[in-house]
Image (cartoon, rainbow, N blue to C red; front, side):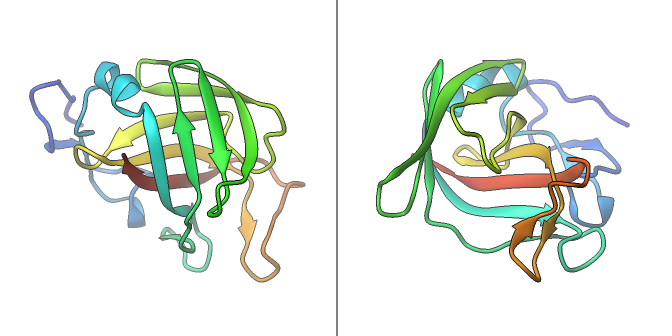
Length: 155
């Protein structure tokens, strides 16, 4: 395994990563962990929430989304496509990890790793309950250990 440094953007950080399809190699985040906390501030236009092993083993899959998050230094808001506020909470970010205390928190991450694929495309990586695509429900009786990513662009 190679280590990531701030000046080695897009190099391979690890040869195997749970955060990649088929546990493949993972490049370094575009921004360092210190930079990520600043760069994630703003409006995150969600493109999808991807669950690993949803339909195919070791593959991330999910549907399209038009929802968004507004992320501030100490607050976060979650909106529907038509602008209705779904949930809000307080948040704190340090070393590329954002911790969130949602008011409701249903099917939303409480802690996530911030990973940038490019200057504005971000993954919020976290562990969630498995999602059953057959009935479109989370299997909350099971442990929240399924790799899940919210992906989108920062505006």
